[in-house]
Structure formats: structure tokens, C-alpha cells
Image (cartoon, rainbow, N blue to C red; front, side):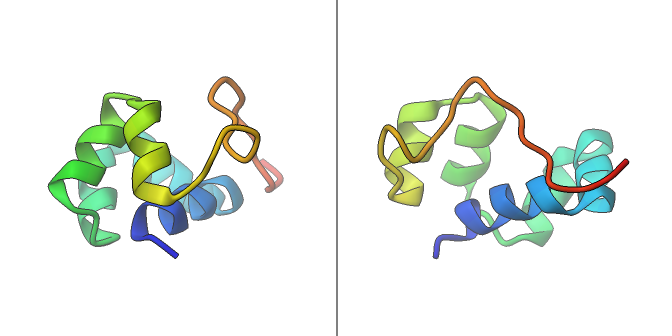
Length: 72
């Protein structure tokens, strides 16, 4: 699994990490080991690049929904 996909999934299930990401996205992405290209794609919300970098295809990748799997 790509580090980008792993981080995206973790952000959806880990409330503390999601808050940390909201406060300092760059730091969280660096700690996750994302490449410059992966960080840029995520920050710019470049969905084509994110799909290419993660291997996800349309139907597997929702671009207009925020899903959180944790209680707040």
C-alpha cells in the first residue's frame, strides 16, 4: 500500500491524527514519509495525481465526501 493511501485511510479513522493534520498538515505528511509529489497532490487536492499515486480508480475514490470512522 502506498504511504499516501495509508495516511489518507489513517486520517479517516484516527481523530487525533486528523486534528493534528488540520493544525499542521505538512508536519503530518512528512512524519508519514510522503514524497514531495504525494504531499503536493494532497495539499492541492489533485485528484488525478492522488489516484495515480495510490492506484485507486474511479469508484474506489470519493473526491467530494469526507468520511470519518471515529467518534468525536
